[in-house]
Amino acid sequence: MLETIELRKVFKGKTAVEEVSLYLEKGESVGLLGPNGAGKSTTISMISSLLLPTSGDVRLNGKSVVKNPQDIRKVLGVVPQEIALYNELSAYENLKFFGRIYKLKGNHLESKIQEVLEMVGLRERQKELIKAFSGGMKRRINIAAALLHDPQIVIMDEPTVGIDPQSRNHILETVRLLNREKGTTVLYTSHYMEEVEQLCNRMYIMDHGQIIASGTQDELRRILSGEDTLLIQLNEPSPELVQELLVLDPVRQVEETESGLKLIVTKQSGILAHVVQVAERLSVQIVNINVYTPSLEDVFLQLTGRKLRD
Ligand SMILES: Nc1ncnc2c1ncn2[C@@H]1O[C@H](COP(=O)(O)OP(=O)(O)OP(=O)(O)O)[C@@H](O)[C@H]1O
Image 1 (spheres, rainbow, N blue to C red):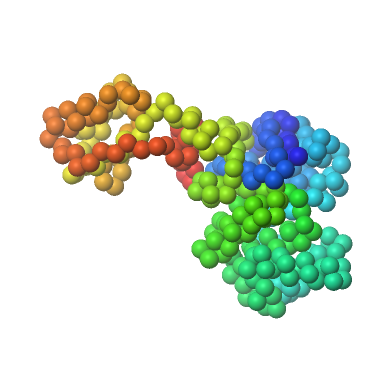
Image 2 (image 1 turned 45 degrees about the vertical axis):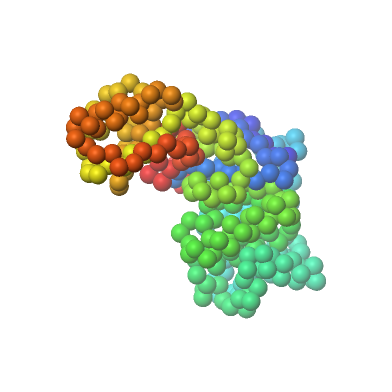
């Protein structure tokens, strides 16, 4: 339905997006995940035809968006990171204003306004001025505004950053409803792995302007399938144990946690016996050992060497 082909954007000699090729099938919910500055917003701006790519193309049903920007604007609803509302107007008046931009009017506009307010859970508050709303409520009205023209594709740029938990839940619920019940195609940008895990069938992981991995959650986890993660609970911290484990061949990574250590090791390496031996020699008591399945956060760490929110 929508794809980008080797999309690139260079700002004054600095490459923000480097040959990004991604696609969205009709009805899919896809995550675009990456830390701050990864190039997510720049990619979205090019997809929505607000920013011209330096090279590459965006295609909607096979047709170039760069050459036909009006096509994508009809079918796309974009929720930007910044709140773009009039503070001195009520929620209802803001939606009426945005509806007219989409050329909606009369009874149709009225019923759309009530429908989108219902979706974001703010129908009862529609008469209040935007300036009286919390950041999260403003974000929800921003989302409502992007949904007025019944877009087939909705792109949300980090919609839950810095807002209260109640609004966050409402937003996640709205995305679910849009995608699962209304069949809207969704591209959801975030640096919260758990949100993308909850909402999206498939995801792209972006870092330094490039897509470094993509796939379903299972596919991405398989990137780490050659490894096990061991959580070792100790009776007390032991820097000596960390040092000794680090030099063992199957040990890829050692991280100190609140209650002990987290080890990433080669699968079936028989490392457990070694760990126990070294701990005994150093008189460190192991309280508990757990082997667990890697999370997507681990996949990201493995691919980039850093945590998502660093
Ligand atoms: N208009 C611009 N002029 C110059 N550099 C820019 C411009 N817009 C973005 N950049 C740079 O491009 C890179 C990617 O930024 P972008 O906003 O796309 O990242 P992001 O993944 O959306 O991060 P964030 O979550 O912080 O918005 C950053 O290094 C940013 O400083």
